[in-house]
Amino acid sequence: MNRAYLDSLPEVRNKYGFQLKDDEKVVFTCKLAVFGTSQGAMLGGDNTVFALTNQRIMANNGRGIWCVSISDEDIASYSLVNKGKFIFKERYALVMLKDLLAYGEDGELTLDGFRFYFSKRNEAAFDAIMQQVMQ
Image 1: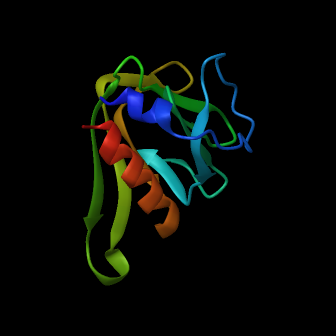
Image 2: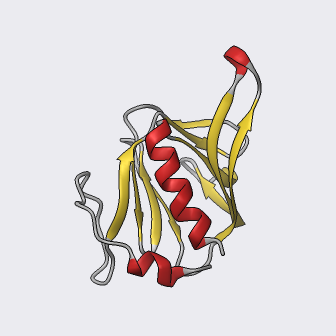
C-alpha cells in the first residue's frame, strides 16, 4: 500500500466531524448514496457520511462509525464494480478486508468487506485516490 501518497494529499475540511488522531488528516469526504457489506447487505442509506484519511476509511451511518485502518494494512483489495444492465445496473467501490470484522449487538454478524455507493463525481475522485494507494 502506498500510504505516502495519502500523506502527500492536501487536507480537506472535516465537515462531518469525524474524530481524528493527532497525526491524521481528512483527504476526501462526501455523503454516500448507500453503504453496505461486500455481499450487499445494507449498512447505511443516503444519510451515511464518509471520510478517507491518511490512515483510515470511515463511514458514519447515524448509528455508529465504521473504521478500517489503512496504516495497519487491513485492506486486502480494492475494485470499482460495474455490473448488471438497465434498471439492474450497479456501480460501487468494493473494499475487501484481510480479516473478518464482527458486528451486531453481540458481534454475531461478520463481514469481509464494504460496498460504497458514491455519486459519479465522488466515485471518480475516490477511485483515483484508491488506485494510487493500492499500488
